Image 1: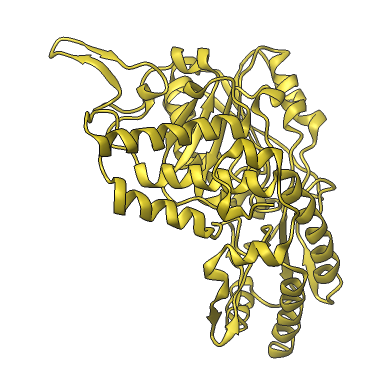
Image 2: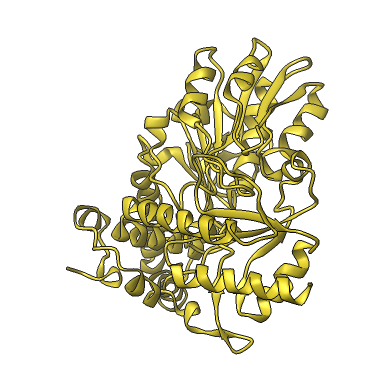
Length: 423
């Protein structure tokens, strides 16, 4: 069977996913071979950004070494090759999330820009004075602040669905907030701060029963779960490339074609136009209407390579392995005296947030760094979540399919070391 590096055709990769072997997987990620402070690197900050496999790094180098040129406007071979690779990446994304058409895939800088795009185009068209936007108490700042800006501008109201002590959305209370005034629902698929998996398919069905469109923040879901936007019936779905083992500075906004067609441009410039005069501009067709100027060509091509890689591994394999690893980590860390887990939802992706009695999370993270262990400490751009649990911050260990039980054991040993230091 082919190794991941040998797989270039995603159709072949999907038909013949390799047997999952975490030791083999780790060989694909060069950064994992190094040491920090003389200790083997234990990278547990994947919710902030993921590491990159060699095939993604190679795709970036290949573009800059062999194909570097601008796209869509060149009649020479370099430009044709770059354009083809860029549009192939769009087709990769379409297939990976099962969008109906490649024109429903808009390349943006990341999920943050994707959600701002929806707020500033669809939102400004449809939200007016007295209207409401409904989100949840689990949201990342990038799915709160754009809606606050819009509501302040329009005289609308931001409503928030509550969560319980486990960090789960209280679905019945959320449904009660849906009304004739609700013009859009915007929810995270997976919480970046707690790992909670929201019941997004049910949320979409509830909203659509009232003819309300739904935007899903999929930044933390796509790297860990098999996502099918048509099965979810999502109207919009935002993705960050750097969290799914692709480069930074690239993301995707999926939108149903009829919605994207009805929305005004987000930015003006080159490539988003068909014709420009001083009197009037005719806008380009979707998705190009939303891709003004020279895009991040190299990163887009790198994202296409990351999707090929994930397809080769198999998202079912990823989800299964990470589920077992999270269960192991939850038991190993949760049983340490003085450690309190924050967010214990029954349905979770690979995030373990916790606090330690009498020790500030930043101190925990600093000591763990000396042991070679990289975790995130702080509010994780989710301050309302911290407020809900009455804490300023947590330590967050977030998993990927290249992490191992041995690394979880190292984290547990590191936390015992923290306790001894502050005893």
